Structures are given as C-alpha cells and as structure tokens.
Image (cartoon, rainbow, N blue to C red):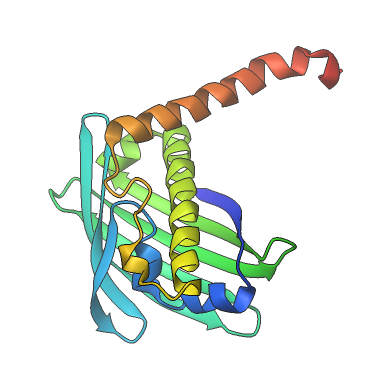
Length: 195
C-alpha cells in the first residue's frame, strides 16, 4: 500500500538535510520506534512498538539507506521487521525528498508499506489513518528536535509528542480521520458549494 504525505518545517534545507542524515535520530521522531544498533554503513537495527486498542504489535527489524543524493536532497530507505510473537511481518520502502519552501523546508514522503499477519488484518483504511496520525506526531517531534539543535541544545532532552504510542489515543485520532472521510464522501457532494 502506497502512503504519501508532506510537511513543512521552519528550518533551512541544509539543516534539515543534515538532520535526515542521522537515521537513528530521525527514527526517534516516530512514536514507538528505536534504531539503536549499528549493523554496518547506513544500516541500523532496532524495533517498532505500537498499540491500537487491545492489539499490541512489536517488531524487531532494521533500516538501511539504499540511496542518498546530497545534491537533490533525496533519500531512499528500506525498512523491514518481524513481529516478535511471530504474528506477521512488515516491509516498507521510504522515499523522502526535501525542497526549499517559503516557510523553510518542505519534506515529501512516499511509503510503500507491505504488511502480513496480524497487522494486515486492520485493513487499508485503518492502517492509512493510523499512519497519518503517526506522521503528524513525527512532524511535531522532528520540528522540536530541529529547534533544539538550532538553539544548541541536546535534541534528546526534548519532550516527544506521543512518546509512548497509546492505542486509545491513536485509535481515537484514526477514528476521527475515518469519520471525516465518510462525511466528505456522503455529504459534501450534495452541498451547494459542490454543485
């Protein structure tokens, strides 16, 4: 399943690119994710843990930079993991591209996500909604860490948004996105503005 998103941060592109060059630091911005083992050049091991309602999934995995273009500010990362209880696997190819913007830097992200086992049972809509919630948290965390770096502070001392991903909070936010999608689908075509 292909998931695309974009966000902007109030920092110059060179600072954001240097930030994205530190993959373990970038991983800390995504709630429940840690890459704390260096497996080789541009190759890191760690895990992801997320809860959605009563279901809790924990993956052991790794991430490797496949391509890095310093001139175009593009990055391709391959990440994969296996659920610790053997209930499935996840594989994700991430393409990130940075562009200068009026605010500072715009980041375009495309994630090609493949799930099997228990995680795949959530369905495309719910997985997309949960991913959107996590990306919103990722953006807030990345900006806070970039702010700390710009101020000469240690980014690890910055409080993270949703540092412990709550199944209830993520589920509630995902449900809100789903309801908004249903509302737009059924009510907006009949609104006077849409005619």
